[in-house]
Amino acid sequence: MALLGRRRTTARLAPELDDADLGKVRKRLVESRAAAGHALVAAMIEQLLRGSGRDWDRRAHRMNVLAQSTSPEFQSSWARDRDQDPDAQLLYAWGVMLRTPYENQPDAQVTYDALDACARATEFRPEDPNPWAVRLGLLRLWRRPSTEVFPLWGEIVRRDRWHREAHLQMLGYLSPWECGSHSQTVEFLDRVRGEAPPTAPTAGLEVAALVDRYHGTLDQGGIEGLTARHMWSSPDAATALDHALANWPRPGYLSHAAAVADLNLLAYALVHATRVTQTGEVFRAIGGLVTSYPWARDESGDPLQAYANGQQRAGV
Image (cartoon, rainbow, N blue to C red; front, side, top):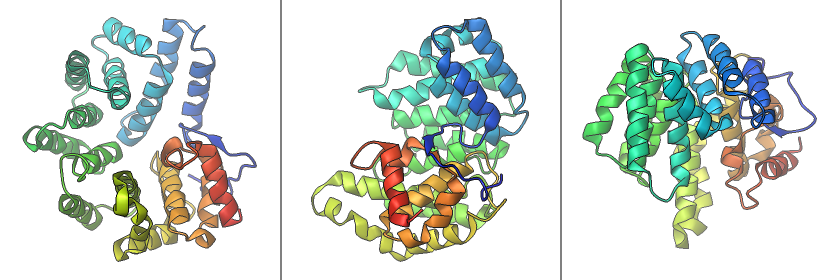
């Protein structure tokens, strides 16, 4: 991935990040959602996922974007029509996982159906870690006990040691806002930091944890919320940002599918840490490919406006 040398004059929301093939399919899906027939949508998706091969990291990124770009009706009908197709089953389950957080209460039957779809996907492609990662995400939504979650984690890491989506799901599960604690989060991050290659798809995990911690503290309100900004100057935060800033924008350093998303996290963290004078290289590496999260968490709720404000402060 050529991070440097890719500069855009206009920033845009880009769920596909720098995956050009995914971007083409997503554009066609979004523009023709009402007109495109079931068979055409399925054919486009099948061809794209076929091109992912056994690159589980790339497949996870593409599946995540496709689950956002197709309707629940298509996902469920494709899964019914192709009950022995692991991609059709996984797309349905992934869509359920993405939609559930926006509901007041997860639907038990829909969750069971999604878990069954994951089981079928695993049956027909047993080597793929992604159905296991979605299972983990679904159990996380229900705040299920660790005795149910940790065995899934074992299945994932046996298939893909540094699966980005699974690590983010586990990070959320272990957070003090959900089923864990600050000490469990620190222990998890320490283990990943000590064992993972620096360019693995989990490279952004520490920065993601900092952003989550910042917003979790803000959401508490009161004195904690008012003092949340001070966490950016803590030694662990400063060390994580220093390391990322020194390495991530280098050409070819990050090559995983969601590298641009991690760069967005880094730029956001640096802006909120008031280290904007150091952020220019990161913004240039992003190349205008903006992610909704975390920029949409700012006061305006408009990710493009928040991104532009950050660029302005950085003098980019």
